[in-house]
Length: 252
Image (cartoon, rainbow, N blue to C red; front, side, top):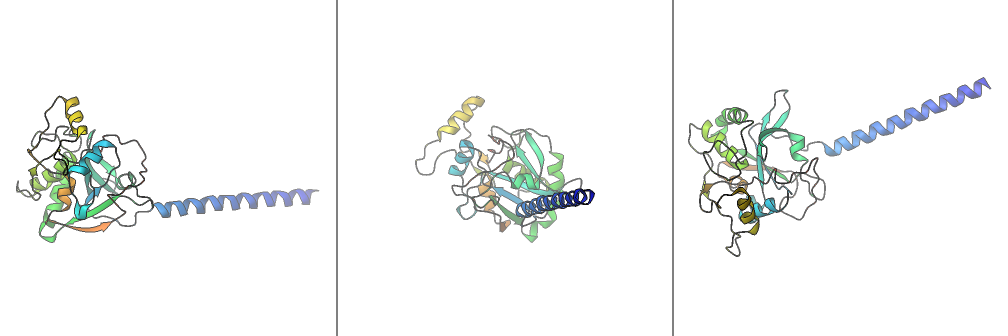
């Protein structure tokens, strides 16, 4: 009886080890699928097609990105305090530092790939990368610029990129401000979502005022688009760790 009991215990232990092995391998397989297929360098700009709702859709309707891509958000890749890659970005809660994996996982295409395109500064601007990143970290915690105004100590996503590289370049802009529009290209009418957005803020729509957007930056001659994770600008599935709402609607 003892030998049978010992045998059954042995079988049980082997089954448990097998189960643990299956679980571990399964986790590894899942992690591998979720691994970052391309690792940006500090200073790279990450352009994102964010599925955050009507505001992101409105941003994409009034701006044009690289090769027609729909971009509603942009952040700057940097090395974090622990050596890991992060993205410095302006979101509705202010200028924040976000883990790269979190940034990439916000909005995925139907194949589970990040709807993110990577732009890299051309060689003539490489000397600006380190000071620009330093400036971006200095601005961490600054408020989000809800009214899209330049020079008000608050920042929307593309304004953050514009400002830190301007400061790094001794106040010489690397990216160009253009008159903003909140009107749909086809109709010339202001999109209703913008009427509602600025009405809630009690502010007038800054039509024609200087501004900048992710799409415009992605087409800058100062940049080269070097990598596309997934397919932006299509009817795609969004997967995210937390509801974004207007958090990354700061495209302009």
